[in-house]
Amino acid sequence: MSLDSIRSTLIRQEDSTIFALIERAQFRRNEAIYAKGILQLDPSIPDYPFLNSLSFLEYLLLETEKLHGKVRRYTSPEEHAFFPQYLPSPILTPLQFPTLLAPNTVDVNAQILDLYIHEIVPAVCKEGDDEQHGSSVLADITLLQAISRRIHLGKFVAETKFQESEAQYRALVAADDVEGVMALLTDTAVEARVLERAKLKASTYGQDITGETEECKVEPEVIAAIYRDVIIPLTKDVEVLYLFERVGREVPFPLPAPAEEYRLRVGGRI
Amino acid sequence: MSLDSIRSTLIRQEDSTIFALIERAQFRRNEAIYAKGILQLDPSIPDYPFLNSLSFLEYLLLETEKLHGKVRRYTSPEEHAFFPQYLPSPILTPLQFPTLLAPNTVDVNAQILDLYIHEIVPAVCKEGDDEQHGSSVLADITLLQAISRRIHLGKFVAETKFQESEAQYRALVAADDVEGVMALLTDTAVEARVLERAKLKASTYGQDITGETEECKVEPEVIAAIYRDVIIPLTKDVEVLYLFERVGREVPFPLPAPAEEYRLRVGGRI
Image (cartoon, rainbow over all chains, first blue to last red; front, side):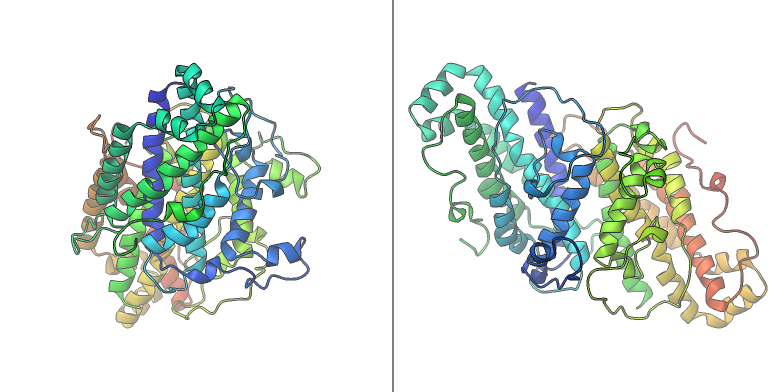
């Protein structure tokens, strides 16, 4: 594992994420799919009260995770379920993964789901309801899984950086210096390149090939803002959380930060 | 419903299909996921002998369809399950779809699955096994669903054409003139535009944005060949099948044609 090989994984993951953003953007916001408790499931199904209290997105995400969990998806250190407490045991023989990470409990999926619904969907989808609820939920699930994978790959970045500068990270963590850890792991030149690349990918993959409109399927500025204001900051939170746990010390204040700190700053919205 | 509105649906569906082809192409062929009976499922699961006889792809496709069937996916006339005989009843209240098609039984998914595994995967993926079996199967499922949706949208095309030239189609069908029906519904200028557009989309969406290589993630010629040799011919088979059933007459010979007729003619392969 090297920082270069992780970076090329992250760059390939950008394509999947931006494809998935463009796919979701073809449908309206369809806010009904995020409303809890309106599914009216059949009361005879197992776990009825709990399942019926979920939104359509949560219900299908949970059931998808249960299915993928059966075929071992969440035994991979790169994958994090949004509903880990409900996963069944895999029905396939276990795989051996190389031990690249220290054991850890870092998981920011609750924050990702919240920001996804309240920031990302309103930024990429037009208002209103086009009745494409099933297709929208499936696009949501693909996109949430892509974003979650991207953000939690921060653990691998953190482990590599830790191995390169172990003494420095240990000293900063021992001093409860969250800002110092954040500063040491931040590479502003790399972050600027990520934003430039995200914008370029958005304008390339999102263009109207038939040439009937100049408009991109998702504004490149919006995609860059999603990286700048949500994906990169949450990735860095994952890195800090991982490094503190790596050294065996509690983070002195709760991370990820409160949701307000990740609001998208784009277009007319502040 | 007009031919124009169906065509714009088909054009948008191209983007989804080409994105999905590019996503699958990041993994190797991983032929083990298409081999039947090697899953070694837990014998205590329901339907064990049948499920254990499937390939990994078939197993996860079937389970995904069962899940999506529960939330009404296959009540839409645009959606066709690969395993319709195993679908559960939906657990949500039924939706009303506008009646645009005549009732029909047209379904070429068995042919699509066969050609997908034996023609499309070998054409878009590098040989070998990269152990990304779960990710490859999920990419397969998204892609199969996109291709199936595209091909079965041919029913809507056929219905529109039938309404525009009912007397002509009735006469050709009554004369068992499959070739004549095929000729009447064929628009070679539109087909040429589809191929040009597929190539352009493949070279745009599949380019390496970082500029490290000139190579596309999937050769544009391969994507055009998939449209020319598989997607368009199967769509036209769907149209013919639908039109014969529309008039209440059996097709005089089996359609879709035998798999040999859809072999991809691309690169070194004939």
